[in-house]
Length: 392
Image (cartoon, rainbow, N blue to C red; front, side, top):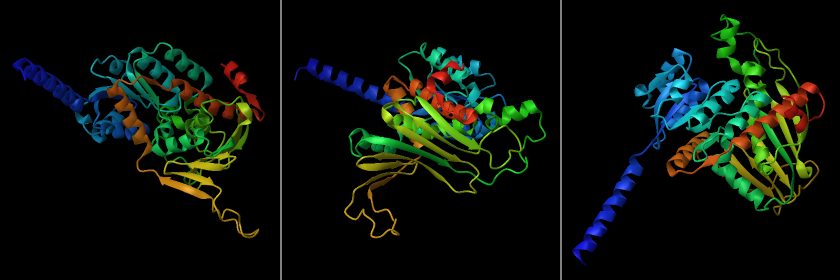
């Protein structure tokens, strides 16, 4: 081998090893806008990711900034901001987590997109139709090389993706009915014993925004949107065309203006497909959060802790009219990790790999689907998608 060949091979090897070393030591520098409860939970998962490094935190309230800098691994050296615009102007930040109150998501998303950051925005997209339309308009101005994710983490769960693959491959046959259950909660609220009970009305709303519909979208938009996003996804990412719903309060609220603590909505999709949402709050600790997809050959059940496939097994028929035990289980797979952690890992891996990705449209449509259900409950009649979109 000539000396030239040896030099060429050595140079190539050094270049390759340097590239791998850079890749191994690189980390996405991210900032967090909103360090309340959800911001702290997701921010902690992100800060623990070897592909990420928390560089800055931002919140209006010093106590939340202090909590974040104490809780997030490596955040003690992070910069602190009180104004989200200052964080977005920081050239040392590659990506942002938006975990502010829901009604602020459109404003903060728009600013992050215009700042050319990679964006992980918590769900839902907004609290109302106007906010959702603002996000869609901001999307048109995005840098298409960036990664944009929303906190609809079911789409990144290994078990959910496996179930979705079973559906699209025809394993359960033709599907005509989907059901989402969001049943959970603690004891009904009786009196306001919260830390802000003696604060002004302005502070009350700012610190406990989730209890006001205009700020959070109410329980169906702020919380139940997860299940609605899942059924939209399994409906081949179509949104419903209309909805009817009912709901009400079983227990009076000591603060805020929630109109329902239980509600059910029936969504109609193209092709005769139906999606049902069944939601109940204040369940004294009982939980049943899952989705079911009924096909002509079987049924899929998904949740944050497992995936199930049901079908025609040899002993599926009950032995008597009183024997209603289910024997149709074909496969069950337990979730091996937190599905929010799976979503944040996908975010940073995608950023480092340079994978352009944008889920804005589906996130907005799932949010609007939740708003459609809320409007149907409030109106006590069928509301169409077009009517909803004309409302703002």
